[in-house]
Image (cartoon, rainbow, N blue to C red; front, side, top):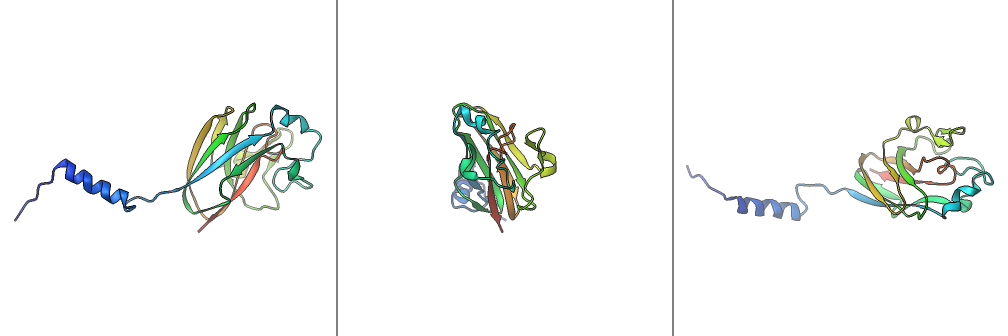
Length: 169
């Protein structure tokens, strides 16, 4: 019976070849997320416009002074990393991900608190409050469906700071 001896370097070289060829590890998808607003006066319009959260009746999204922009509107199911950048010069933003159960109903919005009830919405994860110019990331394994990314800082969701992403099987 022959016994083969391999040194550390040849073994390492074999592993590197396997990973470099794409075998042995599944790469996930990365989505670039921009959290934006139209400046410090963005919140000044809060009382003068109709709320623009998902399924809030009469929403004119062209009036949105805040928003979330994605570099893609759909991804494949599996591991997805959301790389969020707060593009604002003045305002703190966050990014929360939740599944969309019914687009016609929207999210459970607490009018008095001016926020979404994150627990009732099925909060899956978040990039917590980001100062202007800062970034953060969230990685999750997602099943097929529709998901919403939104900012839940006081009033931001109602000002139009949300977007949808589709995860396909």
